Image (cartoon, rainbow, N blue to C red; front, side, top):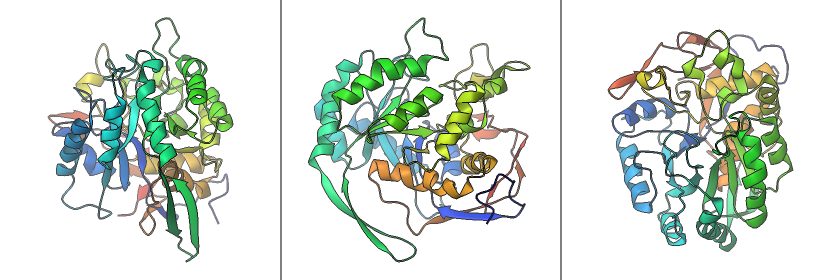
Length: 384
């Protein structure tokens, strides 16, 4: 009864939803992966593994090797019984159609990631010209066209629904910002929509696309009007914060991310989209851990770490506009549906309106990282 009201819900209120998935996550490499997995496996059943390592994950063989690394670093005891990393390839100007088909045949590689060269962390090997990727993208679209399967979903109320669905083959995940010199950093997403996304969608009508971590009103409006093969993920930090949090009172490096935080009008548009109930928008944390020394420097790197409290932070955002009843669809249904994955039916997670204090730091390999809300409180907790 408290879910659809602007009034804050009472302390102790509990909310149980289907176990969510994270459709944008940075697991990193080396010993730090285990630290990340300790957090993400508490609240998600699956997660898209970003491929921007050093060197990047550009081949099917590299993706399988990275998957083995992730699996070998899982916690000994998993909160929800199992966890599945969903692998991606790092798209380059030279990615071939043959490599796409090889990756898809593994059964583990679910997407390709399009980084405009130089747009964000470890993107130097990214795409310089979208047309150079068209052979690979056509192969991805062909996988969509060729494969049609029935999926059967049994809901809690024992109603059976049968859907004719496409096996989406491989999704194209896009960091939707231009990296062209001279384009203002706050305008890079709208320019990308006009120069890259719109022509791409017209040229590839069968290609499943995710505009990842959208950050502007323009992106919301485009996704709402775009064909159904185009959808978007939204982070919890873009729902909760604007550029004042980064800049007012001094530069705060742990609020620096790409896409960069924007004006309050953009945050409001993102929050309205996420809480609208539209299946065009779904959860993707873009949780991006960095050692503290790489953030607190004269040239700090981009990325906000939210894996420690992502679901709780999304709950805060949805509660702020009286839309907790829409949280499950956004977190647990719409992303899985777009990726052609079964929902985590029968697996649940429970949130409680109970605040807790975030530690000042967490272990991260041989260093430490500073998480979002370090030393401050989060209003919701996961019931263990």
